[in-house]
Image 1 (cartoon, rainbow over the protein chains, first blue to last red):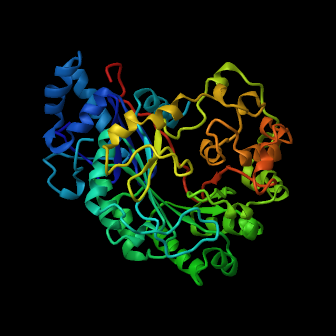
Image 2 (cartoon, each protein chain N blue to C red):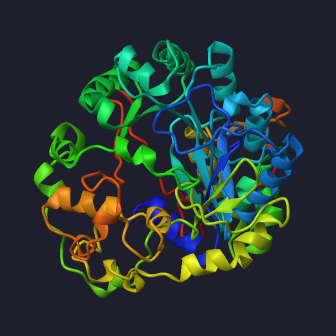
Length: 105
Length: 385
């Protein structure tokens, strides 16, 4: 997999509840509940930080997980969210402001 | 348990107000005969105050935000408020009469990421609807707004409040909902005015009309199941909470007063004087509401309907005792099942002006052609995630 940049969709609602993120897509009202690991990835999805860096600097330093396994799982996770339209993925930094979420709620 | 149920349970445990209903104005361009509000617009929250309070709500963990009124589009800053609420990543639902919504407004709401819009429609017949809103041409104008929102791709719900004057028309509104691709919700709830006035309660449906609605399988599904006698009461029911008001949800008036619910006008604090966190965590009124379990209810705790009644603590409060019965709900439980309630045996219903009225129940139906909202519990696919 090429380097992957990810950014949160502007059309979703999101809020941190305890250590887990609640997300609802406005397009199909699908409700997601992200676990703490997935929540870290979501919060780091700023369009500028590649997934490898998120995994290395945030996931592997916070959780006891093998880097290769964490990256593999993270890649599957972001593909799942992208399929639901709540994350956008690209192989270069995402600068289109239309795709940018505005905070880390 | 559904994902939504899990979220509510978690929010309850964490003391998080998951849902807030914010009325940004009581001004309105209709004068619906059953409306529980006075349409005073003096000293409403300013745009800056609302922005500040929205930030406080987001910081407190509020996820579901209903913006309503009055007619919320009567405020010139309505779109700024919506835009800011979405910037704060609330799940935003708007309640409007859609009179002021056309293509431009519909596209704004869609692009902002508003999750759904609810519009009150009382009848498919212009003369009936317009007589209730007291605004000639209002049905036609509301429907145009609804069609514009549907064309923009917004999810729309037609809320059909039923009362004496439109009880014959719910099937027509249901068909209208299907025609425009909207959800349909029926609600025979007429509440007292927030100022305590009870004259509008005379508009409530007579019991015989409500009985027929509760047995209409186009609305309730399996009528025998819906109208079944209440099951046995157990300890879990006795220890249960009366409703989410004040526990995981609350209501804010256009002046910043915080109530447990729009139908529960117990003043718990004012956002111009205290922060939302201070009110949510420290209000003695909210603490009292939160202390009440089903077993503490003065008459209802001995009622066979305790586990299934939709008893509204706000209506009970407006009848004088938040721990007492809501007589409208007593009668609804009775009409639905044929089983007399403890409140009726205690003579509670006689205290109301309309002894054969209906109470709170809402029947929701998705549009036939639209996908039903789904819940997906997502976690990355490994033991680590």
